[in-house]
Picture 1 (tube, one colour):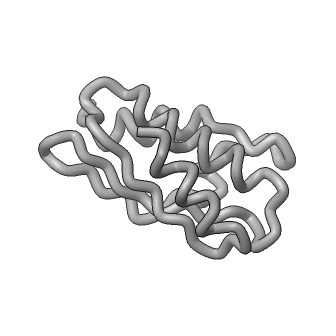
Picture 2 (cartoon, rainbow, N blue to C red; picture 1 turned 30 degrees about the horizontal axis):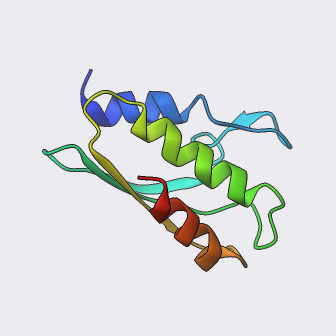
Length: 95
């Protein structure tokens, strides 16, 4: 299993408590890019612009990717969330 598949498998363990579904099935993670050197980039788009769990889901997504062996860094872009800039700042500090 390659690194992209391992990352997707780890992300499938991140569950949205409101729906009981994982973030991959809900398509909350998009544009997953995995570099040869272990640098990962992805876009997180919460279920709604006012998603009450947006911060927690964003943090859980980043941690799930960072926990995959072989991943060196994770760049999470936030799209379609009213607090996107605040969340991006928090996520950038969690490296």
